[in-house]
Image (cartoon, rainbow, N blue to C red):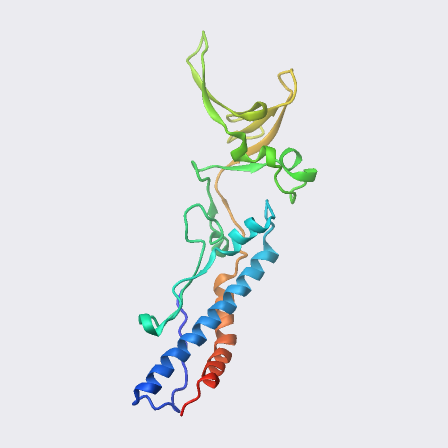
Length: 231
């Protein structure tokens, strides 16, 4: 998305090099400060709308730093615009919350959805995932199962007696379970595999950018000109 701005240059004498330079630097300052205001607004919105699984300073900083200003406007570099992006690196999902994109698995098409009763703190949907059962901590690896009367099969097993099952009546796409006792039925579901699903469109990146530009740029333009008045 591109947002253009128009400014009134009727009071400028652009025939002089000094005024031309002043225009370029004032415009850059107004654009950069407006972009910073937008960045702060987006980071504040993200902090309010998203609940982090691991709400530490490091994790929160990682999420907020996905709102990036690059490049800044710079007359010296001949760049008279500012560009703001969100989550441009691979395997980052933040940008997908702008349009409500499909959430697919990073490996394969299915996603592992935690079972609130067994995988989340407090047994509630809003609880953070317990550290010991975070998917990457299970370290699921393939093992070949040899059978006498049927062909060999591959089963995934992980730490703390966890394993993967294929399609079942309750989980058609399969899931990850944990054995909790000696009997065949002494297992509990940790994750269900789900086909791609649509994320909620709650980021409001575009609407916030338009609002900030309309409301803030004219203020920053006036302030920049006041700091370097024409002589």
